[in-house]
Amino acid sequence: MTENLPGSRRVRVLALLLPVLIAAVAFLAWSQVWMTVELGGGLLVVAAGDAAAPAVPPFALAALALVAALALAGPVFRVILGLLQALLGLGIAASGLLALGDPVAAAATRITEATGIEGVASLRPLVEQVVVSVWPAVAIVAGVAGVLIGVGIALTASRWPQRSRRYDAVRAAPAETSVQTDRLDAWDALSDGDDPTAR
Picture 1 (cartoon, rainbow, N blue to C red):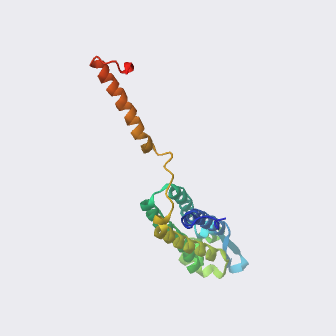
Picture 2: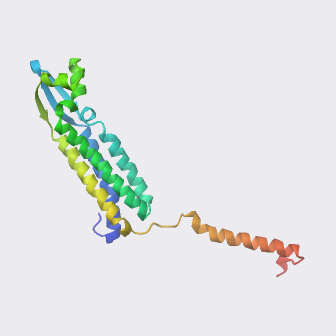
């Protein structure tokens, strides 16, 4: 799709498409089962991304909104938005890392729903085994990719092609000013007794 585009235009297209892809992958990972916890007595508790990493959707939605702003931004704001994209990717990756680092804490809300016992410290003795799926790792990879894309956007912001100024209001200003000046001159001439239509 981007092979036939000039270099600067290809960079811009990729910078606008890749964050959307990253957000879609993050949403997909978040919607899946992240871990299955086995409690005493053979009770199984399943925790999806909504319980294990509730911060992923806000980060992913913000990344999507950022793409819309990025399409309209000038070079300076592109740098700022690129850095913001990197921070959002970092947030997604951190959510996955926290869940992998402490699966019991990540699944705590679901375990509490199943047992009625609250507090991670009280829940740990109940857990016999935790099986973690691949989806936290997918979220981490998506987040790291988001960081790299954000840094790439910031570094290449000045190489993007110029936006079209076709719809800028500033462009119409000189013509409007000229018309108004001509009208004022005509009124002044009429006030001085000179008929501008007789010229």
